[in-house]
Image 1 (cartoon, rainbow, N blue to C red):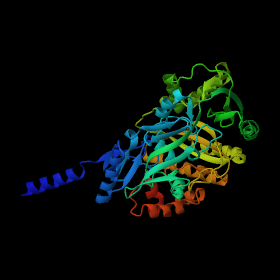
Image 2 (cartoon, rainbow, N blue to C red; image 1 turned 90 degrees about the vertical axis):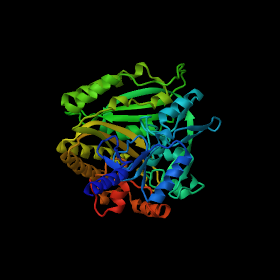
Image 3 (cartoon, helix red, strand yellow; image 1 turned 120 degrees about the vertical axis):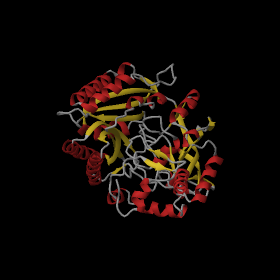
Image 4 (cartoon, rainbow, N blue to C red; image 1 turned 135 degrees about the vertical axis):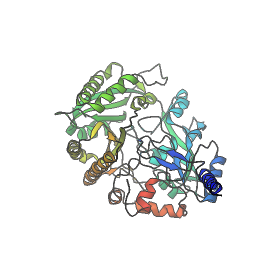
Length: 473
C-alpha cells in the first residue's frame, strides 16, 4: 500500500514537471524554472498557445535572442514563446522602401535579403544579431545620428492580444497601443509582423579622430549635428588605467560619399580570435586594458587608408568575439542617457564611481539619441548622449549584491544629470529610481491592466516593479 502511494506521488510530480525547463538570458544571472519553452512557426500556433495558457491560467513570456538581461523574457512557471523560428520575410516594396517581416527575423537576415536591392535598415542596434520583435519591444537606437529610435521607422505592426485576437497597430489605428507596445517590453501582446521603412545603401567615408572628452559636446553640435552628410556616428571612451581613463576618446563618423564603391557585398566578421584574446586580457589585467586601448587608437589613426564602405557594412558590427563563458563571472551591459550639455558631468561622476567601487569596466560606447516623447517609456526626452557600459561582474551572491549597489549609485548619478537609464538590463534599480527616471511607468502599468486584465503576458520586470511592494534581486 505504501509503495503504491509513493509511486502515485512520483507519477504526479513527474506529470507536473514533464514540460519544465530552465530559461536564462545571455547574462546567465536569471535562471528561471519555466513550464515550457515553445518555438512557434505560424500565427496559428501562437494563437493556440495563448488560448491554451488562458485555459490553464498560465503566464506567457516572449523571448528573442535573450539579450535583455534582467528577466524581461521570463517568469516562474510561464510558457516562454521563443520567437526565433517565426522569422519569415513576408514582402518587400522596393518603390516605397518598406519591408514586412515576422518578429523573429534577425537584422542579419534582413540585411542579407535587402542588400541585393541596394537598400539598408534605418535603425537597429550596433549589432545585427537581434530580432525585430525584441528590438521593437526595447525601442532600440543605434549608430544612425538622423533617424533616432526604431519607433520612427515603423509604419505598422500586427499584435496578438491576451485574448488571442489580432489587431493592427499604427499611429492611425490603435495609436495608444503603438505608443505602448514599442518600448513596452513584451507586456501587451505578441508582435507578429512589422512594416519597416528602409533607406538607401549609400557609400560612406569613415573618419576617426582622438580627442579629450570635454571637447566632445561642442564637437558633436558643430561637426555632427549640423553636417547633413554625416549619417552614422559613435565614439568610445578610454578604459585604460592612468591619466586618460574615461578622458581620452576615439570619435568615429561615416559621411555620405559621392565616390564609387564597386564591391557592395556584405562583409563577415574577421579577427575574432585576436579581438577575443585582447578582450580577455583586458578583462583580467590592467595592462591588458592599456594594450587594447593603444591598439584601438592605432586602428583609428589608420582608418583613412580604406575609408569607403557601404551603409550595410558600417552597420555590421563585430560581435562573435564577445562570446564568453565562465563559471565565476559574466559580462553585462548597462546604458545611461544624459542631455548633451550634462555629458562631461556624468563622465566625471562615472569615473569616480568606477574607481571607488572597482568596477571591471571593459568598454564605454557613445551614441547620439535624438529626443523622443512619443512612447510611454521614452528614455531620451531631450537630445541625449547614450553611454553604453560593458562590464564584468561576479556570478556569486556577493558579486550580485555589489553590482546592485554600484548600479544604484550610477542611476542616482544619471538622475542628478537629468537623464535616464535603459530598462532592458538587470533589475538592480529601486522602484523609486524607476519612477524618477520614467514618470509614466505607473500609467503604463495601468494601461496594461486595461489591455491585459488577467496579466497573461508577464515577466520579471513587471513582477518586480508592478506587483511587489519591495524589489527582489
